[in-house]
Length: 289
Image 1 (tube, rainbow, N blue to C red):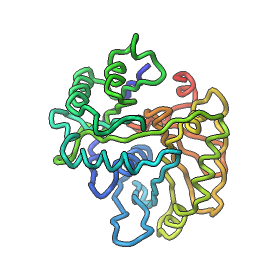
Image 2 (cartoon, one colour):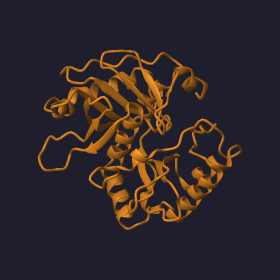
Image 3 (cartoon, rainbow, N blue to C red):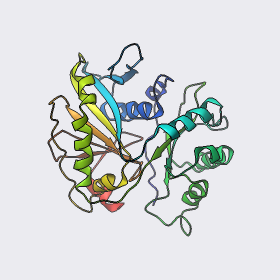
Image 4 (cartoon, rainbow, N blue to C red):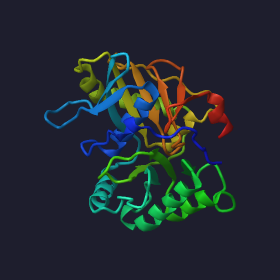
């Protein structure tokens, strides 16, 4: 069943910059929608160990946000292929009114992705007023024709990202996600691996801010499956460096519709609609499982 999101993107999401990777841009937008305020790219490449995004909330608090990924998939080859096609203009989406975030499986061959057909499909979604379409959790061949259209293209999900996209920027943001099979313990294990590396905490510890947040793009479907509350979502492991105030987890292989927040060492997970920032109860995730 597709999730139809109830709120449009707003003008504050127009802060797109080529200085950020698509994943960092998506993270900045998502967190800003939830917390409010504004965001600016911070990692300009001027020096090493700069965190990615600075958020300034309406009450004046400043949050350093670092974006990282975890999973068995090495994204560099796909990222290079995506960047190459983006630079060539394949994902400009000139006929689209909105900006879209498109998620592909890692088995997809980026060079073979039919950009013209993808753009036509997204244009059809715009005509239908759709805001989110995915091929998981339904029967795309015999059910939803929109999901079937994505499946034929080799696309896992498409989410309407910005109703007022900035001029001169591509309107199709492409990312990839990895999937494996595992039990609920895979989620804390994956987060523990991220925290044990310590590189993200090192960047954030040096920041002169009020809060330090880590955004994890979880490319491991086994770990991500624990966010589907068929079972109790496991607690987040503690931060061994005691630097982080919050961890955000986005797992497109499980659901591109939601982003999740937790405090290190805690089991109180909060869930938000990725495209609008609306907080939803865990029962909503359970109903879609």
